[in-house]
Length: 610
Image (cartoon, rainbow, N blue to C red; front, side, top):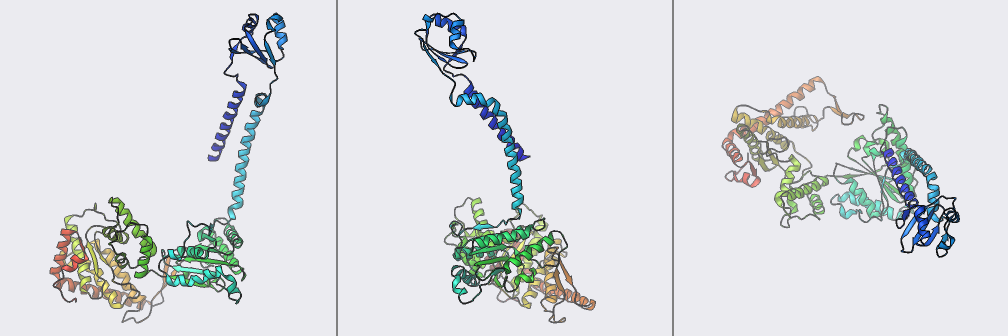
């Protein structure tokens, strides 16, 4: 309907334009004044006429006073017949300059043919647009099976990315350097009979820089880079995905040497045999075509297939065998030094206070990916702009860390005095128990200002990056989680729903201690239960029991016992340090927020932890 309206408007514009041209050529000149034949004859008899230009259907008259007139006549009537019929004395016209002309030029032909051709032209233009639209639909149908890969040419300097633009992931970059070397100097490898890996699978959590690293490989090698997502292959029509795979590799062979990058490979590379018909069968056909194309390359084809996924466990085994994706590059979460380098890259074009050390941000962001750090600095820049400041300072960055971790502040979410007091004691309980236990992370900040869905929060961050956690650390963390619940019970003699999230986390951690980590003294070093993911249903996870009902009962007993021990430990600390609990809670009610320095200053007289 939209295209039809557009075509009709175009036809109307053409019609109006042609009509304007026709009227321009058919209308008399504005420099001539029209008059009748009788007036013209009188002017001849009075010898007022200087010259007459005779055309087929008009007379152009110039008087002696330089006035111009236009006289219409019959097309078949000649000038001599007019003079004879009106009885004009021939002596009167001897001094009149008479010029007889035939109509000529573009004006004649337009005025003669346009009335007949205009309807046909309008119809022809309308049919042309109709046919063009039909051809466009046909061309779209024919191109439906073509690849939608986006090509980045090595000549595009503006968007070029190299390893210098990728901070961290040192081991991954070292491993990919040989891929770059092969693309630049393939003969060196082929002469020795070496076969470069045909497929490189980048594995890592979301935001660790898999796509960025693939583009950096293409930038270093200075070869074309074809980028496509796994979901772009599959359509509801059978055979389209396989057709697009063939077209993609056809383009890649023409641009060899090059890199083909398939993002989110798990969208099309999941394990086969779990389909339930429909589009899932189409996905399996697409996967089969990818397997065939990858295995069909010869040694002399300089094409590297790179792919990225954060779910390598669900990929089809045929994809991971030698000859296809036979190399796996793992991208870990950045450590403190990598985070510092990433922050330097993303802060390059941001006006950050020179007195602010970026390492402070790196220390306070364990577990952040590269994308999280980029988002963090972007949030800090947005906050600085909202405050009408020109330089991004320490306060804006630290505020953005909390916003990313916990959500934005909700200062409009006003609690009643009773709820505010309960929240203060709840958070004070978390902070106090965390401070008194030796193996817990230090408290960075306590607040009773709402963030996200929490009425208050206690922010704890480790001093260094952790890759393993001891049992004692987990048990003490359980006590910290239950401390808010216990504090409410100790101070008010009742409990609220505010501890529901803490209880859920404590239960999940305790279950993992016993069933996954083998840390139960009674049940021993083994795991209980097998977790399976339903491939077709996406994130649907089921658990299959590999133990008896008797063991299940013992697991329940162990979970309850572990949580009870952690609760008793928190109760012991809060009862013994009740004065300090009141001090922290009252200070929170007064200031609403306590940072690490203010919190630890309260323990200046405390020498040893429990």
